[in-house]
Length: 494
Image 1 (cartoon, rainbow, N blue to C red):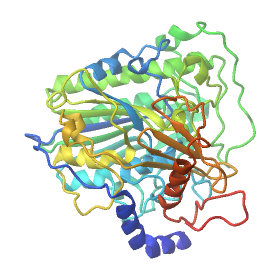
Image 2: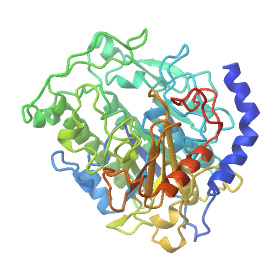
Image 3: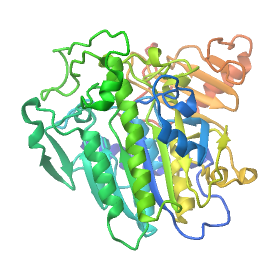
């Protein structure tokens, strides 16, 4: 870790300057402030596709409660995850940085903590929780973190969270019935799951924990980051009445656990599932019921009207553990899925509800991403971030019906390194460019006319393809763990 820390100490001043100059976007919008700071709940699910909700076109799996939440607020049709895999996406969400500037740009697979554990946020990586804590909020994390283990600068209690309960390690979160979780720095044994007993389902525990956090008596407004681990594989779900709704409904091909792979603790292997389609459907259905429990609790306590809730997913749909995203049309009309930088891998649902401020039945095509959430919530909470160097732009004006005051991105950027060569993508208005090799050709798509990215028109617009390729070169800062891997022996000096 000395090498990494030394690098970041060296590069941080340049990093901050470059982020500001490149994006030219961070900061808040001058608007009429809310009459009082709202409670804030950000619900993040794991690997749910753009088309997995009824409000986004899902036809097989019912999601009436999230759809009702959408009808009572606003739906974003062009919202993007921070990355196409877990850790960098969550890092972007928490810090307001896109994946060309963030500390965590991939799922790090080395070190004593195993997959996704060791490469943590640093002390200078300011998070949403830190911003809101300074603004007087009570803050809590429930669920999957993946940005720092205990003993690192990135553990949740050091990143602004008053309390946390859940998974710290990325791969540990693959297990739906773990034998332990973490609470505020301590390992908590779950005896009911010893020996693969599968008695306590993690996401049910997370919903209960979230409700307990909401119920706490405190005069301060609260911020709850509720990060569910479903519908990520492994495709296990309690075999109760919800699962019974789908078991036998689909033609199934059983998934048999691969005995190879995973680290020394077995993380990375997925459990066998005789009914993978039914399990996936039940997972999504169960998330919908969990959201209802949260909403019902807010109404019971009389705080529903002034609670801002966001619901999104960390990347596109997966095909692991026996999942069949094509069957459920989980990516809708979009090309690609998890680990792709085509739209299906990074465009995700975003539903926002805040009865005090957001008019009902709203729909927006405003282009936004995870790195915009920090400044947006800062605006909602009246938290000061004017000196914070970030890539994000607040979409608070869009939320409250003041679209005429909305500032827009000049471009959106992503990179992905868990392949033979590094992948990059950039969006500028209606134009989307993808490069699957830093030394290779740029693919170009007109999303207004070709949402499915089927027709590469780079040869018809060579100057534009060159412009976007150059923009990719300049949209990132160097990183010691994730340099651009190219097919040519000499990687371009970015």
